[in-house]
Amino acid sequence: MGAIDLADIVFYILAIITLASAILALEAKEIVYGALALALSLLGVAGFFILLDATFLAMFQITVYVGAIAVLIIFTVMLVRREKWVEKEGVNRVAGIFVTLLVALGMGLVVLQSNIGQRVASKEAASFTQIGVQILSLYWPVIIILSLVLSAAVIGAIALAKLDRG
Amino acid sequence: MEPLVNYLLISVALFTIGVYGLVTKRNALRMLFAIEIIINSATLNFVAFSRFLSTPSITGQSIAMFAIALAAAEAAVGLAIILVTFRLKNDVDVSELKELRG
Image (cartoon, rainbow over all chains, first blue to last red; front, side, top):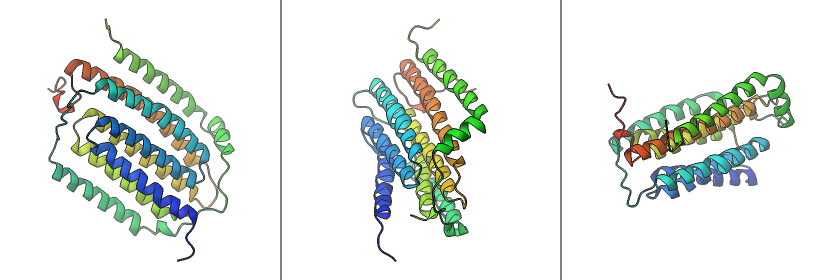
């Protein structure tokens, strides 16, 4: 073990924040707190992006997820919430935890058994200016289709949520 | 820099939490939270793998951007459906939605 790097400490703090608030998002009694915890968890993922030298993507994540989606979710939660909302547990909780542990065990063993751990990151990260070059030269059809999907989704959402129909 | 395995284990843990939420919760909003967590674990995987390529590459980040944008569209439609459900049923419990059951 060498000297403890500051990035390592940040990594573990981020891991604790992200995982704990992800669990809190699902388990918080009051669903508004759940929505806030979800936003915190998404912020933690953005922190991981920064540690992985994907600063532009981290900014994108904060703008789209924390800025747009989390706010949308919080507003919806406030519209939908009722006083003394008793959430019914669906399937047996024990069975759910069992299935979850099986999934975790399987995927975790796959990750740990593979020799993927020996990979080392390249010395310098790819420059984020390459994103612009790539999505405008190689992936331009994706941008067009994505814009159509986004506008279709927004129109569909407005049509669904419209109060007076017909 | 942390090894790739640590990022993958974080991703596995996030995915597992999401699966747990999808399996046990019957509140549509909680299920949407779980889906968002799962999508985030996938994007984290993309970015981690692209950083640990032997030659610097940006492709994983581009794909992650597309995934985030799609997740935004999915959240918009999902929340609209939840609003309509609440208006019809005065609840967002998915086990109450039986209109399409044959």
